[in-house]
Length: 178
Image 1 (tube, one colour):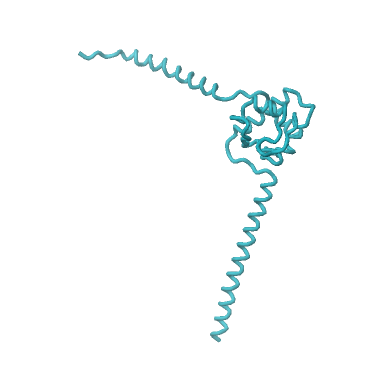
Image 2 (cartoon, one colour):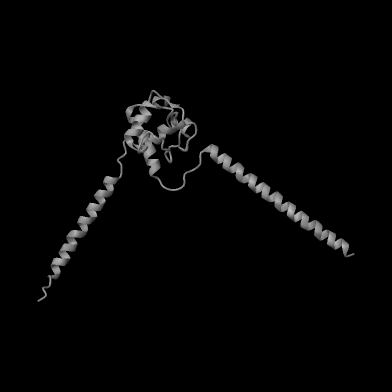
């Protein structure tokens, strides 16, 4: 004898199960994202107006200091985007880590408050969450531009040489037929 379940039981199980799963997945996704320690918009303003961009580049691409987008692992932390690591690094500075020189405490700007440092950390974290191509810093961009212009000029010289050789042969053939 085969017992059938009532249709309402299956429908009510699905009606209960689907929202429960959606709430569970949403909660897990929210828990997986790191809460930002400050306001990234204020952090961006601070980054541009303070001494940060002098060493780390205007687009966080690095320079004298390591790149901050994508963030360079210096070997002194498991997760360089950990808010506490960034806050302590900005607050206390670093000395000779990862082959770079010294970073002064608060980037050499003694006017930075604790909330300012949290905003800077939030800005760095937020920038690293953005996916897609990273713009080149001015130095590497200039080098890349010079390389491609040089390649273009050399290709045009080679093409000019080949065409001139062909043209000279064509002229020689035509003058030989007279």
